[in-house]
Image (cartoon, rainbow, N blue to C red; front, side):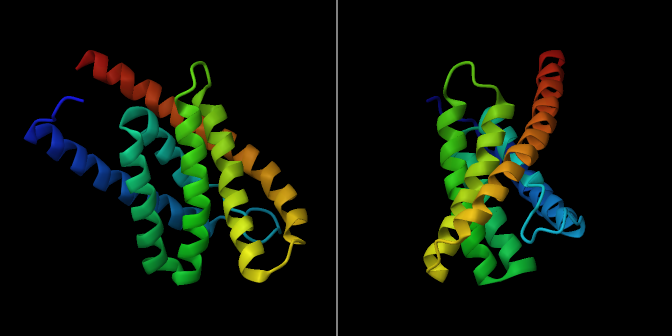
Length: 172
């Protein structure tokens, strides 16, 4: 891997800061949007930013962005309990999305859909461990379907942004 110039390093740091800020704003906005009557359902808008980071930056940067978003969101909006569940979901999601993104001919929308499902699996899995109840598997089935739908939505948005940015990069 080629060593980045100071200018390129600074550019990546600034872009990463902007992406973390964007994820925090999107997370706050999505907390204001009621999604059905099922508790715990969110659109996962920040997932779109992570898809962008996986494909347009690199996987280690995407992991770092996820961790920063979880910690900062927890400190600003949620608390330690929220951070634990978000981190569990985020890690499972990022691992799945990172692995799938390297498979040839798998579209970013599919990667995002798997990420949405994996996030819910990670969170419910932690809840099952913490609460000592396997009955949450029933709830996971509902969340997996919703994760697919929301993952598709954020994947389509992220793909559109990436396509537009690649077009701008070619012109510049």
